[in-house]
Image (cartoon, rainbow, N blue to C red; front, side, top):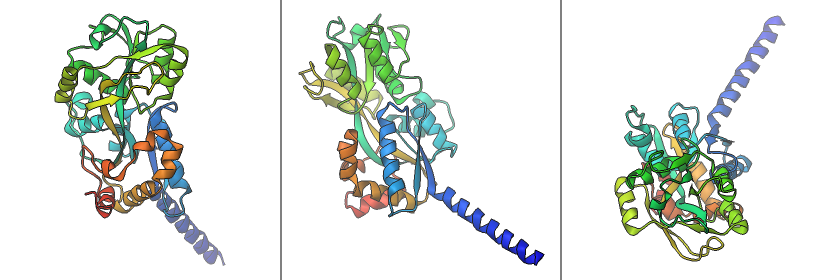
Length: 318
């Protein structure tokens, strides 16, 4: 009887271990950014869709993170499976330049699909004397939290235009919401924002303060693109924000869903298919996802994961 009991206990232990192992294989983490940011809300929408689906046996855990650089390193160390950040940071990580210069880079990062574009908005108050990017010299400028995608590509833009922190202006490492609050309270002179359109924080500011956005010149856009092929010419349409009636010439970056290359092809395929099969639901719930489109989403700067590549081939866009 004792032997029989031990066999039952041992069998139950094996079944439980196998169950946990299987759960581990189908539970994926997806760090994004701060809870007030657009990327966190997109990660939450994707997670809810995946977790509530009866079509696939996969779970997502949306996580707060310190931003793009941290997300890359989490994936490289297999402490995260998927993540959302800009294509510029992904390119830097793969090619070992910029924020990753001098590092020995593991080739593990793959794209799942593009999500939307983030144009640069340089926001100041209408009463400000700042009308061009060169007018920022000597001013207090909010650039984002250290290591965030916002801060990284702001630095890229400034370097391309021969400007730098400290020497040309006083940099304030503030989050998007903190930067806009600082502008409203006259604590900073301008804010660099890389966000989807429209940005709720800018809309809120424009409802209580007269604002303006600083355009880039065509020559400045060319210089930025020449040094950073992931940053391309873009326009913020006039009327996007109250008081800003003219089109604003700027640069933009694509934001994508990325994954570790070792995640099984079938899982990435199922997740990609589920998201695009439910794109109308996602667009209705997250305004930033209105750009989600099968054709443009397949156009990524870095190599697609075989799972999403299979989906896009089935859709006839590759």
